[in-house]
Amino acid sequence: QVQLVESGGGSVQAGGSLRLSCAASGRTFSRYNMGWFRQGPGKEREFVAAINWRGENTDYTDSVKGRFTISRDNFQKLVLQMNSLNPEDTAVYYCAASYGSAWDSRRLTGSYDFWGQGTQVTVSS
Image (cartoon, helix red, strand yellow):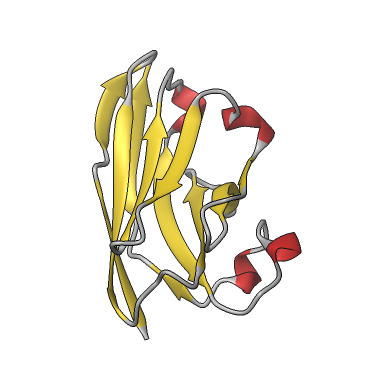
């Protein structure tokens, strides 16, 4: 069992930055692929970024490429650095852990075994 707790959300103006963290407890998460997802008002949960368990591979949805950076330190912390935020980034952001699923399925919510409770990010124009 892995417990995930996100932090770092908040309200910013367009063009600003936020740094989201996800702290893991329970079983060591060093062997888990990790992902960030978000769910905007009236929208389905969508993939944002993922990093494999070794930290060697990353993936981003097109709308955040060049602005967001995912990283992990394997001391039970996952980070999403978000720069040049715009109002379309407004959402609840969730971190998730996947154990045993192939890297090819990193963008699928069903590939993740554990989820945090989410942290709100609001970007105003």
